[in-house]
Image 1: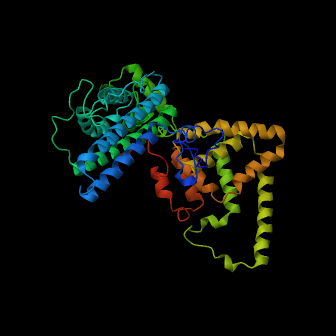
Image 2: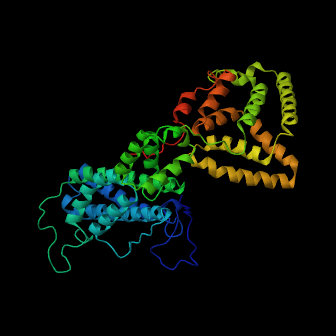
Amino acid sequence: MLNLHHGTTSLMIQKNQTFRGASPSWANACVGNNGNPSYVEYSNGFSNAANLLIDQVIKDRSIHLYTDHFVYPVCFNMRHSVELRLKGAIDEIIKIAKIKGKVLAFNSSSSHDINIIWNYFKSESEAIDKRYISINQKIEPTILDIAEIDPTGQTFRYPFSNSSQKHLTNVSNINFIILKAKFNELQDHLNTLHNLNLWLHEEYNYGTFTSKLSRADIFAISDRLPRKDQWGSPEFSNLKSEIQTAYELSSNDFSKAINVIQTHYALAPKIADPLPLLGISEEDLLTFIDVWVKENPEIKVAKNQDIDVTDYSSSEFFAELISQRESYKRSWEFFANRISVEYLAGLESLFYFARDKLMVEYYSRIYPIHLGEAQITLSRDVSNLRNDFMHIFTKTNALDNIITSLYALGHNQLAEQVIHTHDLQVAFRWLDDARSGQLFLYPNYSGY
């Protein structure tokens, strides 16, 4: 997020009398460290300028705003915008490559040849992840058109080249309607590319990949595998060979993928080998839920039934608060001798994992954080452990989050057991989404 300050600049430190801040503040543009713009922000400025100009010329129908005059700033801004977007995309894949242990280097400041820039991005991005292929194919035709007409950004800046050759002698006309359509289409594809870059950077940060396979590849492979107890069969050997051929994997590469699948909360259940919950046993979790439901009987009421607060008198309201306080006291007395730092961290991880709804790997990351916090809390004052536990217990959405997490982590049987034991089918309208995984991010990017 840009950190913008549009106030006036002090005249004591401002020497340049042209490029400076002044009143009114809305007219001040934030530049340099006052905003920290990247290639993307620079590119947006040039593309917006191009679109504003081209829209005005089209609206004017070249009566006062001549196409012959405006074609140069329009095309220059378009071309420069694209150059900046591609350089920004290269910066983004350099970060992704670093996560994968690969070093990429590109001198963006010295290179302005859009052919060189595009070819570098295309080859390196597709070597990093094959999901770039589809969007690259959509971008490339217009990029090559630009590279053919203005490879280095000089054609629309000057009428003659450095060797005194007149520009655009092979092009008689440039139609503004076509320019607008093609440029807007390219912008949409470049936005999709940017979103893909951001997605993959986040995805690879979670560490679910091998040198040969992306997270999406590993998810796809896991869908083809039988139960783990069938891996010794001849059918599995044949399937292994098919997968190795399809993904160009050695036996060692295949073993790396299997290791990831067996240690991944979303994938291990697919081979009928779910991973245990962290910090808290199923028995302890069921006990927690039993007590929580007992103290929250309203959970069994369909959540689309609104509660009319006008039905409560002030005396009834305060009586309910007192009753609730007693309920919480009873609950803590029941759990006081059952709580450990691992138990609390496990409970908190289930709750906050569902709240944030990030990739499944997030669950394994937040558990040690909650465990460390619980250990610090206990070392200071045991009463703080009570406060942290009751903070979760008193959450009205505690059970919603726990059940959501159970589904996401592949503990569907345990989730269904809770639902049927406490007759909660009506209470949770989101159950179908939780069962299908719709409440969490898909394993693959689906933005194009």
